[in-house]
Image (cartoon, rainbow, N blue to C red; front, side):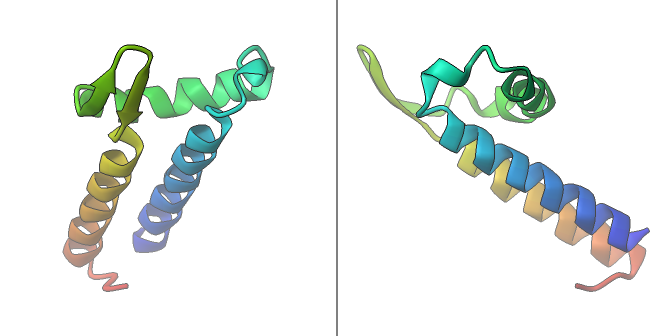
Amino acid sequence: MAEIVDNVVTILTWAIVIRALLSFAPNLRDNALVRLLNDVTEPLLRPFRRFQIGGGGFAVDFSPILAIIVLNIIRTVLLRVLGGGF
């Protein structure tokens, strides 16, 4: 079970990183795989959307970083509860 938790968090972390990188290529927004990636990661990012700096067309979105930090905290807690240490 610990390995499953670890793998799921790793996959979600990479999905968030890839989504953040793809945000610099706006012409890919209509791509089916990008839409799927957005559908998977948006529920994880939405709670952190309010943590943006800037405005007027240029805002730095810290939601991917915050989501990854929280995912790793959750992973650590779950692995300790499950006895998987990592």
